Amino acid sequence: MKARFLLVFVTFFGFAQNHSHSGVNPIKFPNIEGYLTLSTDLHIHSVFSDGNVWPTIRVQEALMDNLDAIALTEHLEYQPHLADIPHPDRNRAYELALEEAKDHDLLIIPGSEITRSAPVGHNNALFLADSNPLLQDQAQDAFDQAKKQDAFVFWNHPSWSAQKKDGNPELDDFQKKQIKQKKLHGIEVINFGAYAEESLSIALEEDLTIMATSDVHDLIEWDYANKGLQRPVTLVFTKERSIASLKEALFAKRTVAAYNDLLVGREEFLLPLLKASIEIEVDGYVADTKILKITLTNHCSSDLLLENVSAFTFYENSPVFNLEAGTQKTLQIKTIDRISEVNLSFKALGAYTAPKTHPTISFTLNTKE
Ligand code: ZN
Image (tube, rainbow, N blue to C red):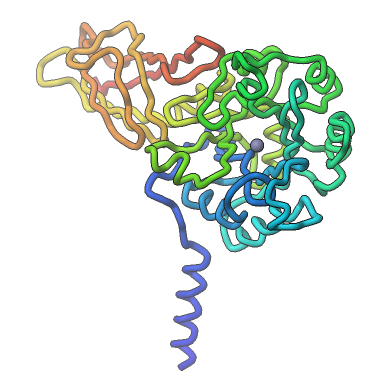
């Protein structure tokens, strides 16, 4: 009887510890040297502002997407469901998400959205101890409160056509002042479906953290999965899997913005991410030819569009090819002679380190000759 009870207990406990809710198309990126790669969505809404789902659903969706961290960033000032869901506490969505996530391996970051018309626009403050003091009449007072709580603040969708008719983000004196006073630290270059090259330019010129977020208001399934898409995520390169480490990494600008086959980030993080995502195996020379066969494996959940820019050309493949997420591809390379070492370089056409600038990844292969 005792043994049986123990068995049941172990089975239940083991299940509770290891169970996974990963969906059919989980978001997956390898770690890079020296850092863990955490997939995060740090701009999400629930019924506690203008979203249409309860906070618990956001946790469940994040688990299905295999995310490491999320933030429910309710508009502090825009509360269209308040008559139906009265609540005096702007931390409530965070608390409900935290409760739902407690038996799962998902970090919940406390945060809020400071919501104004242009030129201030919308800004998310993360790692808040208390959201309520940020509810202020003046935008500057809200930013000052965020600073007081040592929050990480980023500018949401600066290219949003509802606030900027031409879709071209522009730094206003307000942002310049916040950046100078270290009250604005990041910028969304991808929000929902929109990638703004101009926002990337601002990130690089002003030395801001590069971000991508879903800004989801309805179901992830409805807005993304059902269309064969994955939500935008900010990949954050952290020393540990903790909220403190995530905060340190965001302030240190160790990020890549990812949205399906689009990857945007500083070269020092984008290059190692691409290199860690692609594994190359040498199959050897084909019969008595001077044609080398290799197999590429894509270990991440993004398709990688690559162009061969090596000294050697391909035998049977197009110089531009799509290395689909989670799949393998065989290439045949004309190396002129049978050589012991081959250097290959690929330009990643879906990846950007600056507007219109692609990173090039290089590999040195031992051909076993
Ligand atoms: Zn928002």
